[in-house]
Length: 131
Image (tube, rainbow, N blue to C red; front, side, top):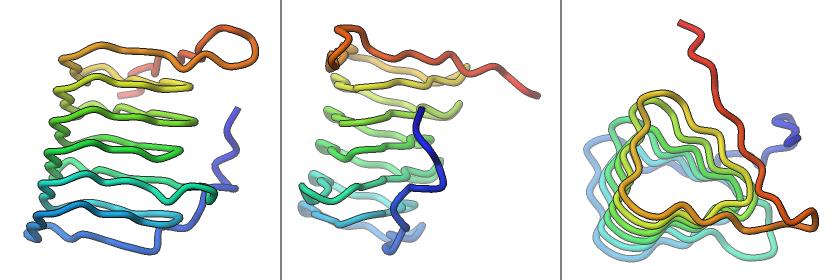
C-alpha cells in the first residue's frame, strides 16, 4: 500500500537526553529520541515521516503524513497517510488516521477516528507477532 522506498529522508534528530520546550515544525523526516513539551507538526505540501522511538516522550499534538510510534505521546495524533504503533507505543489522546498498523503491546487511551478515504473505509492492518 505505502511503498517504503519512497519515504522522505529523515534529516533531523532530537537525541536521547535532549529536552525541548516549545512547538516544532519540520520538513520531510524527523526522528525523536528525547523529550518534547509542545506540538510537533510537519510542514504542509511536502511528504513527511515522524519516528518516535521507545525512549521518546512527547507532550503535545503530533501531525505528519506517516507517523511511527514506539514511545510515549500525551496529546492528539493526526496521521494523514499512515500510523504505525510499535509494541512499546503509549498514547494518551485521540488519534486520527488514514491507515493504521498496530502491533501487540501498543496502548491507546483515547478515541480512534479514521479519516475516511474515497472508498469510505479506513485501512486497518493487524501486525503479526513474528517473535
